[in-house]
Length: 399
Ligand SMILES: Cc1cc2nc3c(=O)[nH]c(=O)nc-3n(C[C@H](O)[C@H](O)[C@H](O)COP(=O)(O)O)c2cc1C
Image (cartoon, rainbow, N blue to C red; front, side):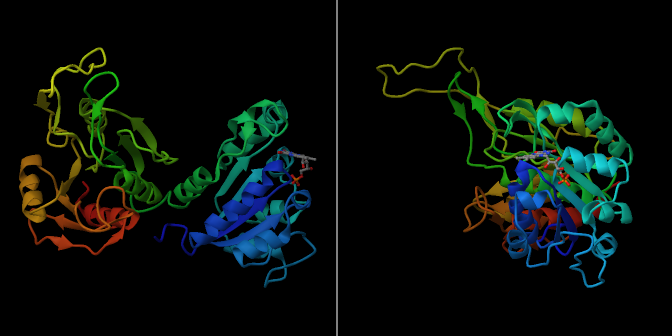
């Protein structure tokens, strides 16, 4: 699954925070995602974590001192500043944030930042009082005004035992921010993309719902793919167990009617709507206010009424619409019928009964069905790659 991180040169600065151990996971995840990761440790960071860990995880030398060069060019900070696509400092101490705000360059990390012009992402970690201190706040403001992208810190229990704002943001979310920053000027920059995902829940009574097997993986993958290409993404999601992606506007809904309202409100000013959600065709006509009790009767009838067709009713001056069709037979024929009934530019037909395809899997085999040309059968691909293949085809259709 090649993401935007593939082949990118990332400098990962690690500073003297108790959260430095989390940077090992970050170095590993960035490397696994295909990035070339050059780790720079401050001398305080080395009190918490070691060179061997990062060298082992990244398969690359680690820079530790201005006068202990590791680079081919002999001057680490110049070499790193030249080749890095992005500098990420995680965790970032109050001290390093202060040094950066004032242009101090007394180690490889700060010198690399000052010598470079690539995007800088900072994930602070410190005690809540240190973060709230006016000096730190002023330094953060200064860096934000210079275009630095801050991630966190989060509120919660801190290593000191205090509860407050100072925890480093978790690794998956930091990765999301890095991807979004790298993709900021991608081919969907300036476009507003709305993606729906997950299986809607239709209330039967206060404790029971009518739903389906959708896990939301396909829609979430599309939202991430669009974000990584620079789009301003809104993900409208029915309940799922997935982590909501960072740098995406997330709207949680439950029922088909909630989803309709959320989608219709936002699409008026959007470029693209991709309905990957599994929306219930029917809902209980009269959900009860109290839990339905087991009675002596052998059967229970629940009357269902039809839900509105969300995508058919979605409109906007420049809106291009893409529908998903989850089918178990006559996949292409049924998708073709949807092209007309829903007024969409393209249908992504999905045989949910096929192996490794459909609900809950990380892969999908889809067919792109168009109004004016032959259907395009795609091989079994990772859902993220399906998302990118879909966006490639939709891009020329945007108004
Ligand atoms: C056990 C321990 C934990 C620390 N954790 C943090 C921290 O989370 N955030 C922070 O800003 N400073 C923390 N400090 C203080 C920094 O290590 C100190 O300010 C140091 O000068 C930072 O240097 P650096 O920014 O060059 O890495 C900690 C110090 C100790 C002894």
